[in-house]
Image (cartoon, rainbow, N blue to C red; front, side):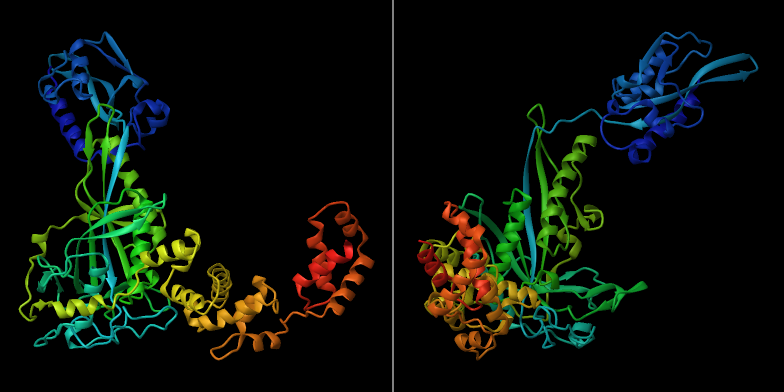
Length: 624
């Protein structure tokens, strides 16, 4: 009896497995790394032995077709003689390249007699030939959304409650910064926010972009649950800012250029919230439209970034840029900047062939740490997927799961035609003339990169100190003010370090402490004159107690920080210390130089408020 019926049934199951390989997949890697016992639990009853037996050459051919040694269509023509039971071939599990089959001998009773045959019960495990990644090249382009800090929204006079929100400020009540334009009510008309256009041009100029002299607005038709009019006003084919270049620092101290493809202006959507205010659980989503309509500058780079660290560096440098320009608060935790890396990998195999994975975009990352982690994970995921399946993937959108520290598939990527762009009929085009452009260029001022060069080359600061000072514009401006008031650059750096710790302890931004460069200069003068100790503890006490109109020396006196220069009092304290501490004295006289510091500390404890420098000088004189 021929068993075409069994072949058809198995072929159907096989094709289903190929379409859904994950249903019987067991972990990752080639089969050779798994013992039969480790995978036996996936077998259907009856259990299969660890050795596969064949009763004739035809069955062996059938097996060869299934594991890929012969073309797949062979399955449809193979048969097995029903009365054969002699074992003529065997193949161990470890020899299989792709599939391990479970075989069961069936006995079939018919009118003409009793027949035995081999039937294929199931496929146990799908594996693939090992693929070797000899080397790979990472290509990452970034899409960055920057909320602009204008007073009103992009196309209406409603307050910009999101983009202009300061750190530690109390956000407004949900849905309080809305009006008929935001709600998309019939008959309303949008009006362009001129300041948002100017902020965008300033960013473009700082990135050496070509500024469009003529640009227009387009409707992007896409369903946003939190954008009531169900389209977004954006820019499609005529962006405000064209090609440019933005330089970022490298580990070797050189600058790496990153090409900017475009930067266009649009409006932000609202927020869908999945918890009630206060963090309470709800079984539905609620919408807050305060963010809807916020001016949003989308910056798109070319794929010029080649490592997760470079991606994070670009993000940090761009944050500094928009903050120094004053066009955005740039606070990641408040959603002022959102990063979306577009990642693909060029993999070189053992034969020298290059395999290019499809681009995946990771959406809405709003911390530098997560941006770096997500990029690193996605790079390795693409390589691993190719190694295990040979698949290069499809152009798609991914999200980041912070709980599992992994990316996850959201949807396949939309194309431009899916959005049905067309010019917005309610908005006039924007024309940028020479006078307007010249005026905006004059407002840009010194950019972070130029300041870094000045700090390291003219003021002699280390690159590390320069980076700390350039962490935000407020700190950098305060440093410049202190230096202009006469403070040595390195002294100003150490004082700002103490001030930064005070701000952290007060849970405040450094600029919100309202200290001036003049006050810092006065503190530096007190230290140089020996009137107060140069310790961080002393300066922190001064900075903590300082107010807008405080005088540094007067405040130091009130806090008891003024050091005594009375040599009589200092000598008395030294004599008292000598009388009660013979061992440290013996150590010092025996040549142990480090004992001097301990002796000075003991003297300072004997008489509070003494000048440490004079104590050390007088102690050396007394000890000879």
